[in-house]
Image (cartoon, rainbow, N blue to C red):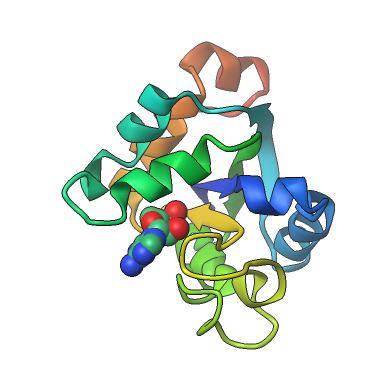
Length: 144
Ligand code: CMP
């Protein structure tokens, strides 16, 4: 069993697709074990995406991610990190394979419906960015 971190982005939340996306994740073998809705501030979005700080799209990415509420969640399942990335599809919704979340629910490379951690250390960092140890413990999600 592994855990990963997922965001249902503002475009998908606004379009009322959060339920369908969650169903897709669950059908794909990933169980949400901690979930909340958050409206990111500019500083939070900049902090979360700090690895992309030098990229030309950084400003637009931060503006988009603060444009409305997101759903942040911890997903659990076998090979959860890789599985989630498979279910999401390629970053650019226009190039994502048929049947993937980004192809079905995203619009383009920026408004791509979902984010998912790309490796175990990123998953740990991203889960910790949004969920405290106390919150996870209250939900029975053991850490360590
Ligand atoms: P995500 O998986 O959340 O990780 C970083 C995000 O930056 C990515 O999804 C896209 O939404 C966005 N992104 C990545 N590359 C580009 C790009 N070339 N132009 C615009 N946005 C991008």
